[in-house]
Structure formats: structure tokens, C-alpha cells
Amino acid sequence: MKGKIIILSAPSGTGKSTVIHRLMENAALNLGFSISATSRKPRNGETDGKDYYFITEEEFTARIERGEFVEYEEVYAGTHYGTLKSEIERVCDSGRNLIMDIDVKGGVNVKKLYGDRALSIFLAPPGMEILEKRLRGRGTDDEHTIRRRLDKAGFEMSFAPEFDLTVVNDCLNKAVAEIERAITGFIARP
Image (tube, rainbow, N blue to C red):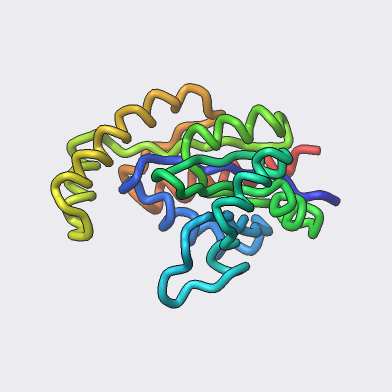
């Protein structure tokens, strides 16, 4: 039996990676993770086929033209990220349910493509002030980057109504439990 698709999108700093890590620990959800493709060079310690599929910008563009991506984005000039259709098939054909960590526009597009076979979840921060505090608390970004992330978060929040479910991450355990219940109900449906 083919697995189903779970889409999780959120503004940066909302806790999406932490939530996905916790969901992956729940064996009952039978989750597999999609490996994104990118045209950027591997960073120190990254492995092709494990962290990302590293392909050249030319190959990325050719694959876009051949319709091989379900979603992609040029994040920076000349640097693309995206999800290959073959990656969705790889996980779903194995009988596992695919969890996707993708941006909001990609999430909306994947939901449109797969319809009832996909559950789209938007993870929202409790508020912009708290999001700003979380971003600053990371200590990884300069002021310009934090401002850019906050501006982008405001834009991304406008997509929340296009998702099947919005979960506010004001308490990690509560948010994970709510998402687990939604996924459990979704994968139980024929």
C-alpha cells in the first residue's frame, strides 16, 4: 500500500525541525523523510543522497524544464532547492508516509498536486514578538538576517488559511500531540 503525504510548513524560528524530529520518533506514524535537491555546493560534513541531492544549477534547471519537481524555489540567485517527484515516489512506494519540510508556497503547491492524498499542516508561532525573541535567542543571525526572516514570516503567515490545519506552537509538547493526532486520523482514512 502506498504511503500518504504530510506537509509541514512554517516560518523560520517556529520550531518546525524540532517538531518533525519528534514526529519521526513515533514509529506508529511510519514516517519517511524526503531528501530535498539543491544546486548549492555541499557544506562540510554533508553527504549527497543523505542531507540533500546535490546537483548542478544546469541540471536543476533541466529537471525543472522536464517537470521532475513537485515544488522548487530559487532561494538565492543561482541557488535552487526543491523536491523531486521521484523522491516522493521513493518514500511512498516503500509503504511509508512521507513527511515534507517545505516552504509555504511549496506546501500549497504539493497539496494542490496530491489533493486528498496529502495533509497540509501550517505551524504558526504564538505571535510575531515571540518569533522575534526565538530568532534572536538562537544567536546565529545578524540584525539584517533577523529583520529579513521576520518580514518573510509575515508574508508566510498569510498562507495559513490555505493549509488543512494550523497548529500554534506555543507549547512544543502540545503542538506535537495535536499534529500526531491529525496525522494518525489522516493515515487511518482509506
